[in-house]
Length: 474
Image (tube, rainbow, N blue to C red; front, side):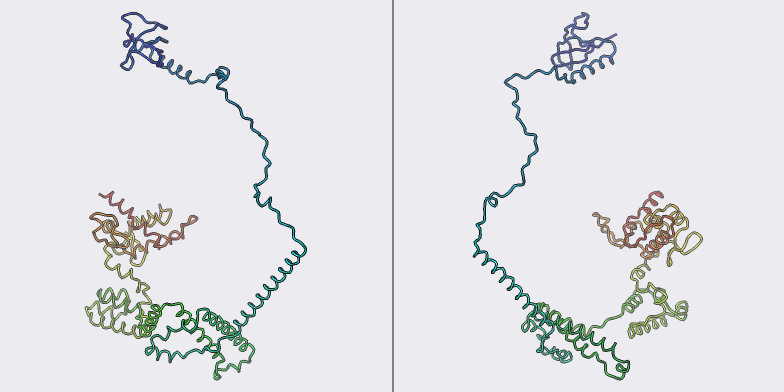
């Protein structure tokens, strides 16, 4: 049986097998000096231990390495020679009681003592300084009071009718304000007229409160003419101040805008949306969008489209003549002016069919699979989870896998970014959000916070549940 040896050489300790010894057939014991091979090189060392068990040699080698790491006791340390002794420096351990640093120049500098004459002169100087300051404050106060009570008697408000007639003859009429008066004078006039208006208003209210009822009978003239005149003056001053700050180009642009506003014709939004829908969609969709009576519905079913189109045109003319009037269809259908509803007519193929035994109505014309709705109600803990699960029951997964919320293209590069995208059905998305809020409000005792459509856009755009469902099917 082959044995193992533990050697000690100049380079350290090592473990060697018997076949690597150079003994020429001689027996080797502990304490013998033997040559051996280790890592392909020849060494010479003393045998420390011999054993047939490999583990015993390893334990002895580990113990010797640990003993080498141990530090000797302090008493066994060698004393340094006298030449290499370190000189000790005495350190004062007492806390320092030094004060904060002071400027030696200021400390050493001493002011010369003042004589009696200099003290008297200094006292008189301080009294004169206070008297001059008080006099200046009194003059400023009197000047401010005069500005508050006195208005500009030379300024007279112009007649707006004459200004409109002369505006075309003299286009630079409003550009000479900053040449005559400065901005400070305009501000002072504006403040003065504002205070006069406030005083006139309070006097008028006081007269109405103190006077008997017969004084303010309807057949007598109103006592508010002075107040109206002051209002006109205030408006002219504000216009004057605005034009004083504007440049010549801005003044010309403002004048052109005022001329354009006189002839601007505002078209009601409801009329525009109706005409747009009638020109781009068939009459049946227009009837569903704007509403209609039984006569128009019967005419569509019988194939008489000309009568319905003429009725719609008449209704459009009536809405143009009276913008404030609303049709019955607009009152019944709150989605008349909603642009998202008009865009959803071409996206009905994304949703499941009409209401039946397997679907539940969750919104206006929006249905959801009953099993998906039950699963969402059971397993959802917040609005995000509920909306994600409900999308698989409202939308057909294969129809919307390539869609985006707004219809915009993907920002990623490559060939996929060039392909046009289809937007998701906005009415269905809003119905999902409304259902989530209703369910969250009824959850007791753990209600989830209310969310809006803007917060759920990120959830809808990821299509997490749709992708998982399609991956499981494939």
